[in-house]
Amino acid sequence: MVKEHGEFTDFYTENYSLIHTIMQRRLGDVAEAEDLTSEVFRIAWKHHCDGAALTLPWLYQTARNVVGNEYRRTARSVALIDRASVNADSSGSADADEKLDMQRALRALGDSDREILHMAYWEDLNGKEIAAILDCSVATVWVRLSRARASLKRHLESAASFAIEVS
Figure (cartoon, helix red, strand yellow):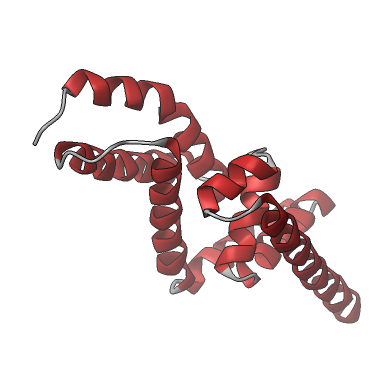
């Protein structure tokens, strides 16, 4: 059963900016964000044409899955980290080093820790919104967020101590 195309157009118009911003923040590359945003809405279109309801939690989950696939793809490519290292070294700024340390620490986290930190701090979602997306209680969100922050802190401290040893 194919639903009204206008319904999808409205859903797309209302949510495109949010999904594109999420992709750009998580990937740090505008072109890649546009590609993955298109992929999310391609999947949404198919979902809509199959007669299923389109909701923001479903769309966000789809975006999470698409980003997860992209993370796995890039994790297989060491060239990405090498390129980031070369860029940071050539700039020579402490700010670039901190950004690189943060990127590495975030990549070292598990998918669920990285995901909840992105939702809370880069996408500014509140506990209730995160709970709806993850299909859990708000209390569970706060526990998971606390654990993810602690894990990130350990990774950042480890990077800092490594930098001191190398110096």
